[in-house]
Amino acid sequence: MDGIEKLLAMEAIRQTKARYFYGVDKRDWVLFASVFTGDVEMIVPEQAGHPQQVVRGRDNVIKLVSDAMAPVTTMHFGHTPIIEFTSATSASVIWAMEDHLWKNPDFPDAIPCNYAHGCGHYLETYKLLDGEWLISHIELTRLRMDMF
Amino acid sequence: MDGIEKLLAMEAIRQTKARYFYGVDKRDWVLFASVFTGDVEMIVPEQAGHPQQVVRGRDNVIKLVSDAMAPVTTMHFGHTPIIEFTSATSASVIWAMEDHLWKNPDFPDAIPCNYAHGCGHYLETYKLLDGEWLISHIELTRLRMDMF
Amino acid sequence: MDGIEKLLAMEAIRQTKARYFYGVDKRDWVLFASVFTGDVEMIVPEQAGHPQQVVRGRDNVIKLVSDAMAPVTTMHFGHTPIIEFTSATSASVIWAMEDHLWKNPDFPDAIPCNYAHGCGHYLETYKLLDGEWLISHIELTRLRMDMF
Image 1 (cartoon, rainbow over the protein chains, first blue to last red):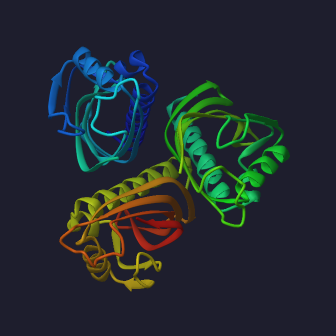
Image 2: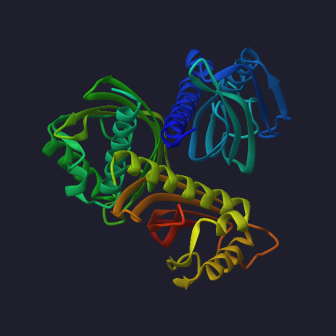
């Protein structure tokens, strides 16, 4: 890849992750689903009273995330990605991240707190498929999670 | 627009919004004014004890924002914009956002709290005018606002 | 510099700062060191019980930062950089920033609080050296620092 091809791919990766965040926080599951490959793998760490989870396949990822989001209002942020191309069709990406979760009073048992604030990193792989850079692997790692 | 033209425009849009944030938080109203079209429309939601406000025209926007910022110290952040071009001279942009407002003790009645923390999205339109991508429409929507 | 040269340089600057953040928060001092020129100057404001510090030289910067990070868990975020080229090999950059510091219970005297939350801006200079855009000057300025 030459410089311009990399710039175009990096921008495409940023736009994919931007849709990821908007999709999850606005509960737009069609938009959210559009950022993953069909065989995506997601790894969510033990956190907020839930054990580590590993799920494979876009439909399973959507179910996992949409179920987890049902009892909370959330805001997820991603920052300053380190983007490294491992081939012309794949990239390793690390995003610094922060999330805020506020429990919906209708779901008192959803999480063991009223408000959770987390920080960490997403470790991701993107693949170029049919002209789109999509997330094929996403692992969330935590530096800190506070529950209030 | 070809790929490179879009990259250049996306970068210009990012730089415009970067100046927006630095201008508002540093109270540099000349810099802040430079990011808007003359006929900009701003929509601020009901929040922190204030009703929804809709203002039109750059001078009115500067007055609204500078008045609102006078009694507080603030930090505004914008993240992972979704940028979609609607023509060669206009773009729809959604920024995830977070803001922190700390009340100045000299203005005890300014907001009904000492500290406010908000999350949401800016829904914006940018126009290309005389070689610059400027904000012509900006609506702040909230997912959450907490007052302490 | 033409438009594409600027885009490539801006992206390189973003990647450098992305490695800065990942390096400091993951305590990867080899990665962290790789983002600075040998003669870098760092200015840290008076904060969290420590006086202002000015250090010069990459080794001294690494020692200052790694010592400061030893007794805390941290998350640093950088946002919406304003990037202005001052020559074909130098750029002035302002990053909005936020950091979270949680004191390690093993170091009760490290900072005068259990948790500190700061907001401000990094004022930086980047230089192009041997094909890499590196930080040659970095000054942290604060809009707010809260200690809990």
